[in-house]
Length: 153
Ligand code: FES
Image: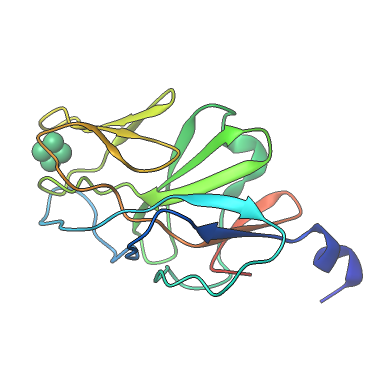
C-alpha cells in the first residue's frame, strides 16, 4: 500500500450497538435484522459487524449526495444504502427493508420502502415509521481516495 493511499484512508465504524451484516438479499425476500449506524473516525476498535466482501469499491464519494443517500449494489449483489449525512462522513446500511425484504429507495435524508411505506433514517438505518420495526443493519465501509470500499480497510 502506498503512503498516499494509507494517509487518505479513513475508517468507518459501527456506533449504534448491535450489528449485522449484509447477507446478500435483494428484492422482496425475508429480512430480519438489527441495526446500527456508522461514523467516520481515523482509527477504531474492531467493529463487530459483518460486511460484504472486503475491499470492493461500492461507489465514488461524489456519487453519494451530502444529506442524502445512494442505493448501490455490493460485490455479492447485495443492496446497500450509502449515506453522507455531512461532508466527508459516510455511513452504510443494508438497503433491504427489515419488514419483508423489499429494497428501499433513497429519498433525501430518508430511505423509503416502496412496498409498505416503512421509512428509515439514511444515516443511521433507524426506523422512522413502520410497519418495519427493526433498523437496517450497518455495513463496514471505508474511504480510499475517492472511492467507498467495503470492509474495515
Ligand atoms: S417490505 Fe418494506 S415496508 Fe414492507
